Image 1: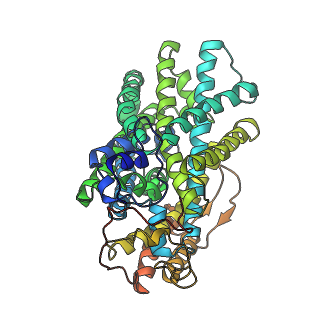
Image 2: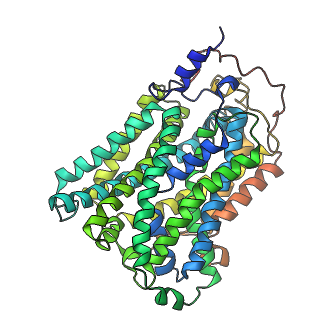
Length: 502
């Protein structure tokens, strides 16, 4: 039985139907995506308000000038999303989500570790988005209904704000790939225009004499800033690079995928990070705010604050529904045998509970957030080093074997584990944490790596060492084996077995 165009549309999803495909590779006939679609997806996912406090910290805490902060944003944001573009190449080659393709590298059991870390990262980012979006709605309610007093003062309203954002996320993420691509493109124009409107107003209020009088910060601070921006932007999205690109036409050049990802994410991030650094020049209020949404709201007259809050909510939603979509695919890769749309529901329940905890129980939020992304950057970068090193030799992924969890399958290797890859990943993580200092805000360090006081550790470059060690160990121990095979006809439907994850 062959896949008809009607079947393909239903499987992939349309603007009015739910995508039925889970993690099974996309047949070639259904791969019609373009680099332009990736550009809009990543552009929309990065116009959220979180770029503003990142820029603020570069000036207020790292002591950089606005111009240095802009350079840091270009190198950290666009550079790290170029890596996301590289992972997109694997999605174009294999037509499957990134962590599903990772089974070919780590083995169907060895891949559990990287997949679990990736899912934890996605859930963490979704909790960040949900919490921040709820703060946005609370600020909007304060203007419209006078309900000031913070999240703990109005627990019912806080829960309602969280649930409104979650419902909007589920609606878009649940429908799937085709709907997400369409929404990301057109919503970008709407919320992007609102962001520009607010940005012009903020820039007009900036004291340019103060900006021009700022002394240049040290190069070491710029290096730390690049690492912080990279960990908080592209590195966090790296494992999701193939999830949207799996629908890309197989003939698209690799360079176009890299450029689309780097430019798509880099443009809005550089603008928002730059704006955050401008606003904080001479006034560290934004960088020190426990609720950056309210801090910016207070800088604006009420008639300007409303469109700002709407833009902030929309930007966070555009980022979150893409993250939830990717997390649902990662959940399926772990072996949870439910339809993709139910995996979306499972993920948002977890992030909803997390947002309620941070808003109603915990004393702080953004300090743990910065620590969270710094810690997870190490194992994610280790995965990147191994996966990209593997891509140097692997040009094809067996679509049937990716779903075959049986003993003796092509990607079973030794007991379900590709020990070369897993060893390289673990060694790189250990080395990376030796250069890492884990600290939440101003509290005493939770963990101090043996080399964290060296130049590499002090400048936040442990993740770079992690990447290099992972790739080097993997390649020096032999790298991938058995990767060059005759490619079968991927336009045919995949065989159904009891071991196929749907």
